Image (cartoon, rainbow, N blue to C red; front, side, top):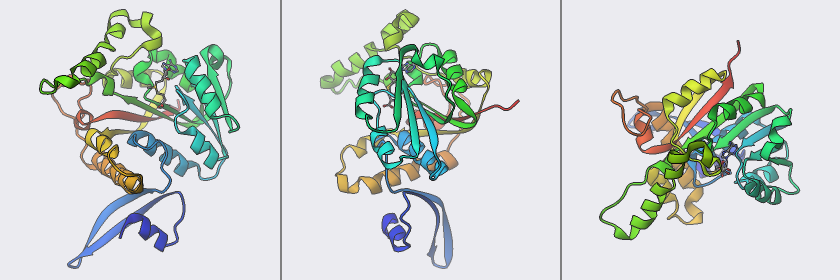
Length: 297
Ligand SMILES: C[S@@+](CC[C@H](N)C(=O)[O-])C[C@H]1O[C@@H](n2cnc3c(N)ncnc32)[C@H](O)[C@@H]1O
């Protein structure tokens, strides 16, 4: 039976559900583990973001909460989330004024405050949750960024720090000359940051090294509560080929595959590799999320 049909048959209409499934084959009960089912999916097409929003919605139930999106860009999927959850107050900040203006117009009439430039630094809010999606690899002063996040997180809050490696994986396929231009262009966009570093702050991007960021996180007074890798390359590509009618089932399947990989098949490899993270999943899932809490002294 399809997951959705099974849920409906039980009258379980909640948006987000975790249930345990077992099936019987020749008198053997096979525990399939906890199956995650997300009925309403946000930020579709990016499994890390869909999972993070789903996890937060599961944690908050119907409580009133403040969520701070640090590096909110154009506002992503917040218009749908805030329309569905009036109990969420969003504070979005982006260093880019242009992106913040777009976010502001997309979120007008909803429970959201958008900030840009220096406006963040004299604010006193404390968020229940901070999310930062695909931002860290663009941040030049990473220590300042982490300290600012810490200042705005409640003592019992959660900081979902997600970063990507996609920009730094430009493989040149010698069999496909038609793709060379875009592949070389991808590689060239990394050069100014390598050469000019801080002079290129507005368009900065540099691969995040796992050991360096994990050390900096500890130095800034956070502890790592959970880590997971996301966005299996071929799953992300396959998503783009599917009709709307199959997306809900497909994304749930995708999230469950990644959940199992992280729970059962995550290994650290001893030999170093050029991707600056020795974890086996990182080679195929170029998105890493750390769930951070404030270290209580
Ligand atoms: C790849 S976009 C991601 C946008 C959004 N989080 C999303 O997932 O759709 C990266 C964003 O990080 C922002 N950014 C870069 N450095 C930043 C910083 N130090 N503080 C806040 N935002 C920053 C950029 O302006 C850009 O909008």
